[in-house]
Length: 139
Image (cartoon, rainbow, N blue to C red; front, side):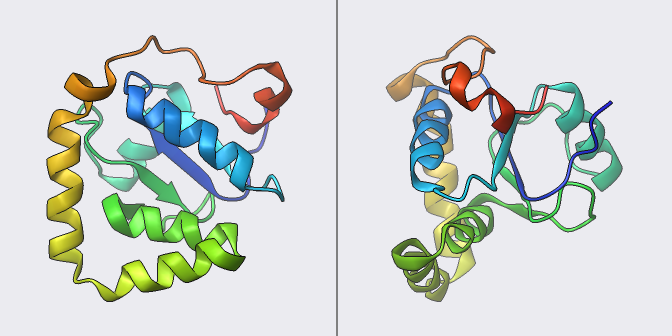
């Protein structure tokens, strides 16, 4: 079995918006360090249980700065973590975004989460990319 290391983004595998975001992040992460897994998958479900997070409520991304660690970031804190990981211009966007109070950011995030299926639809649980990025996905 593969030992998972490095940063990982857990996303809703049924969310059309999440699939769009994952495809975008694959293009923006030129270093290829960020890995992805569906919240519904075995790795994510086990990790969520270990962290004491809900295993059935998929209205938030979960960003793990280190796959094997106990640190995690939810909602907009997770978005900021990913932006900082991308570096350069995106890191600056993350820093600017971090200035906004987290309650405000997360309220907007929750608003989008409530309507995302209606706007972007539901997808199947397959990974949202082609085979050339298969190594960036966990289970």
